[in-house]
Amino acid sequence: MNWSAQLNDRSYCAPCDPNTFCVARAGETAEIEYSDARLSFAQFFLPVRWFESDLVDAASSRCGNAIELIDPMNASCHAVSGLARKAVRAMRSGGNSARLLIDELLIDLSSALVERHSSAVLSQPARGGLSPAVVRRVIDYLQAHLAEEVQLAELARLANVTAPHFCRAFAKSTGTPPHRYQIAMRLQKATRLLAEPGLSIADVAFAVGYEDPSYFSRLFCYQAGMSPSEWRREFAK
Image 1 (cartoon, helix red, strand yellow):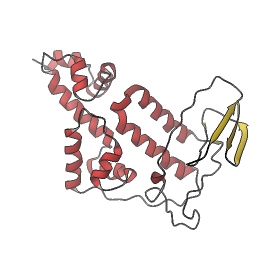
Image 2 (image 1 turned 180 degrees about the horizontal axis):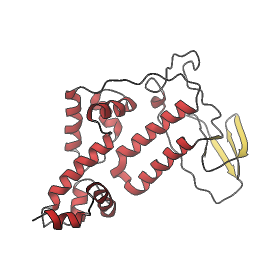
Image 3 (image 1 turned 135 degrees about the horizontal axis):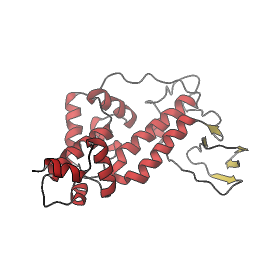
Image 4 (image 1 turned 60 degrees about the horizontal axis):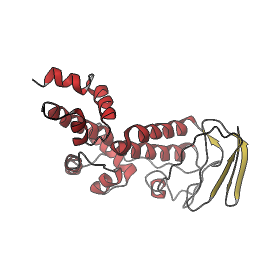
């Protein structure tokens, strides 16, 4: 189908495909029209700070003090659209319980835009991880807020680094991305709670941060190879 977009003084009219995306800069008003009503799309609001020192060399003579996106009104990219679809699936299936995963995917999406669709010169990512004391602080925080929605920005503040840097450094230090580490902690507690016969599966799911028992059961089955009910029958003697 065709689409036309008007963003302040910029305009575009061209065919689009399932991988087409449009980038509006902060403060711009976007007006978009489509030639076919059978369409679904997602909007992502990405913090400007993610596009700064952690992702690009802002002092580069090629990009000055800002990132120049290449053809931001009608770009098509499988990498960008793939990350966007993963984020939408996480939002739909996991909701608040998938907050860390969603944050990580949006950082990856920002990185893909900079790497593939900008004139910026990429900085070399930090090679080192976090200090053992900082890792312990983050893990203790996750443990203390195990049943709550935790955002990546909270963990990054504990480590006194930016969110993109925290993602890389935490994975470097633990061998696991933050959202997977949180899932492992939650399911470890879930197995202990499943041993208590007085708790229903829904009670256990809620106690470890999952408001949707069905989503919890699918996640548990994927990680443990059996459903919570099967695990309870097998191990809760």
